[in-house]
Length: 142
Image (cartoon, rainbow, N blue to C red):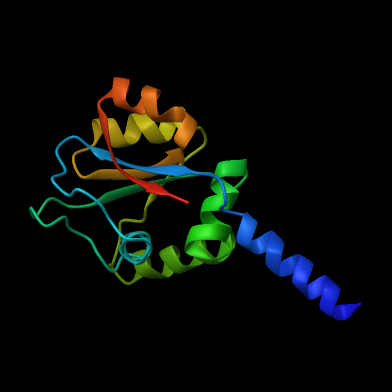
């Protein structure tokens, strides 16, 4: 019985980010793609500049949304409270600014398309909306 529960929990965690998501960036960004490992480093403040020298401005969707929850659980593999606590410490130490939290997918798209160096993750179904807003799609995340 315990093994069955563990297997079910494992399968659920694997499926948490099973949808397809797009990595979008501001049109000023020259990069063609980022690996998941690099993307995690961006959101943890370990990579702060694009190769061109432009400051990276990461944005994410609130964890209270389905896509936001999938981002934290499936990609970053951290609970939202722990992520925010981590960034409070980073800011206190002078290692900010923290990634910007948006409450809607449109907010993420607007932030990325209007901020040089902006980067965000949105559901694949929002590709057309992102491109119309001037964001550039550089990757698909499964």
